[in-house]
Image (spheres, each protein chain N blue to C red):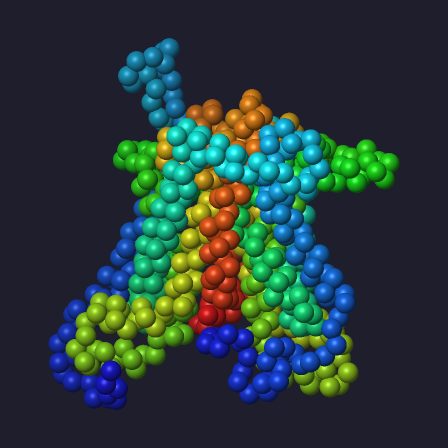
Length: 301
Length: 315
């Protein structure tokens, strides 16, 4: 179990301050390493760079001018996108924020509670519950989506916000991570002390456990947030009303329309650009929470 | 918080044991209820549906004309005999053989290069390579889909300039590579971060000694770093495998741009078509069960094969 609170996960004795920037020592730079890493970065940035440029083109220019030649139509395109069916695009963005935000917040709380119980209590059935949840991590979503749809149809919940929100609230992987994080960050003595002070289990959980697990829970939250934001199959199956669509299903539908109305393509491209801005911003600002060592089963934050 | 020694437990605590015994169950309750409702119940229901079929009596009109009856394993044999099924399985197998080694190989290479710390572009490259993880598969398929169109692709001019005819990557056998590229683009960064995090946790003195003995960066990577991060590699492998067998969003998004991608291009697309286009939920359920059992067997079998080094480490 390796949990480190310092940002570079290095034992304090390892490096003198002079090598703080480079824990492997100040050795010569390698041209090959630099070139390979820059090629990797270029490959990953290229489609993003393209969509930035393409969304400045007019509908005709998209297919006629050089791929990376910018133009001047960005604001026209954004205007067209927002005008599309009275701002349906905004609705899709708001829906996505709702699904990902509410779904992952609730999921994180539920995972924290379950993870804490599995890590810090002894009770009959604990081993069984943990093994079942572990098996849940390996269950492919494919077997779930269609029976989930059919079951929700029986209770009349398909084609509602709930049909996407409820299945998103359970994350076996989130529970698995939370259990590891609770086991590593919550000393049993602290729980004993709170108990002796007369705090009940729920009070202890809210006042002591949650704050101590905070940075690990941010990671659990981000995991689930990205998973819901990126999910396509679940909302695609559950929803029929395009006012409930998240951005992935909405844009995929717009692309389909492009086959008969090629003018739609530039709107799709502009929509793709705007849709990735919030998540990219979230990523860049919370990068330090992405320290997940799946192998050691540890969350390092 | 007063830190009383644990031995000072008073009889009063004992009287509260009834409440204490229930506490873990109340913490687990919401997770278990949702687990049963949205994981366990659908699995059981899929298994049940896969053994049922509709019997049509008379002309199939009116109430009671269509009744559900037990079908034995006929849905499974029908599913396996479907001429679209095995090709989609082979396709996904070939796709997995391209995606998983390429993606994890690149992720490991980039993580080792970052960890070796012999470059000034580390932070920039790490952020750039991780960025595609923030792009949903639908959006990345859309971006690459446009870049694959000969009229948009920057490579068309380049290849033509060299005197070749550029291939249409959205047709023929190229499509498999086109979809694989999207998965590699989207997945390398996340796996790189996972491996990099594991590499950063290796205490420096483990390989400083080797370096003093004259070991090269490459030898240190192969002999020391890779064996230590093996559990991370196993986990990234298993998760990549599960994701690969479920590929759906990428080919569904590329479909309007390509004539080669059929509605049964992957097994999951076939499940979707059977359930929602043909309204044959029984066959769709049988196919889902086959895919799920195969995925579970492959991932679980692999974990057993490597001695379950990844999960359950602390027990």
